[in-house]
Amino acid sequence: MGTSKKEVFSNSQNRLADIGKAFAHPARIAILEFLAKQNACVCGDIVEELPLSQATVSQHLAELKRIGLIKGEIEGPKVCYCINKKAWQEAKQILAQFLNDAKSCC
Image (tube, rainbow, N blue to C red; front, side):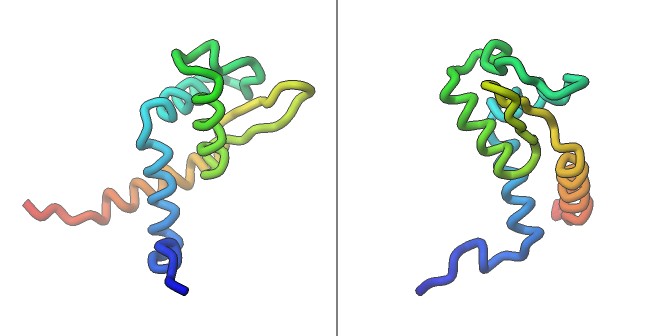
């Protein structure tokens, strides 16, 4: 059997790629911006705040949750979402480290 791409690269490289993927779609940026502006978890329908279908929002929320940038907890028939502050800090640190370590070639 072959080696998967995730096994070839370091944990930090894979984590940076996951974080980059989270920021690689404007819908995810819009969701993160909306959640970051809230003072509490959002239990209402995020779809009402964004010009996207329920299915599209659900897919992006699932990806952001998989990566860990947001948390979602079930409260009755709704899921409440908020920024995962620990993962948010980690993402800021990883991105800053990567950008600071990158050498300028020109």
